[in-house]
Amino acid sequence: MHDDRFARLPKPPYYAVIFSSLRRGDAADGYAEAATRMDELARVQPGFLGVESARDNEGFGITTAYFDSEASIKAWRGHDEHASARQRGRDAWYAQFAVRVAKVERAYEWECGNA
Amino acid sequence: MHDDRFARLPKPPYYAVIFSSLRRGDAADGYAEAATRMDELARVQPGFLGVESARDNEGFGITTAYFDSEASIKAWRGHDEHASARQRGRDAWYAQFAVRVAKVERAYEWECGNA
Image 1: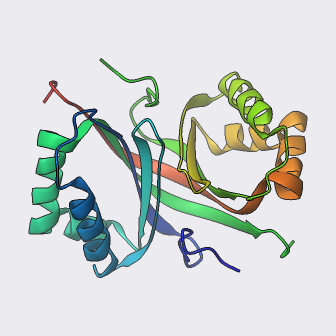
Image 2: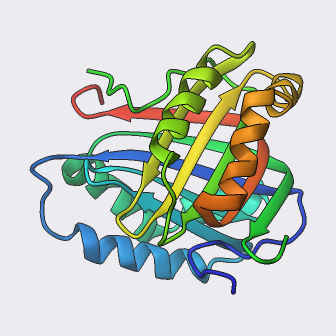
């Protein structure tokens, strides 16, 4: 009973982009649509492996996107529509964010009832 | 105006433990207290660098904890009280979780007004 909010990832090694962000209180329109579009677009990028995301009621969120290589991350970063969305993020949606790019070396999953 | 929900981290390299979890609908008592205690305890472990966490209204959450080395992660993993909390997590609190351990190679932060 794998929940779809968890990414189904291959065995490590692979890469993670950890994106932490705080939404602005006065957030402008277009955020939800852009977030959905970026999710759809990321999923069809070469080397994309999976994505997970959570945002709390205070507007703080963490998204982790997984790719097979640094090259795939760089290609996604260079995608025109993604670059444009990032600019709108700085201009309108976010008060603060942090990006960390990391190489996943080991991983472990657990599901209730599968122990 | 750095928001406290963002970890203040040194320059890479350092390590990330990415913990994704889905709470059970029938979650037992003691979770909030244990989560607070684990946060406090993690913060005083040798090599701890910072932690960020977000959980949405559907009970899906991501916590990223940062440490200076694999050795520090292993020591924290071996901490008695932490091991006991993980067992309670499997017994009572979580429907599913995933742990990925990764080496952060580069990082970038942005704050509105500091561009």
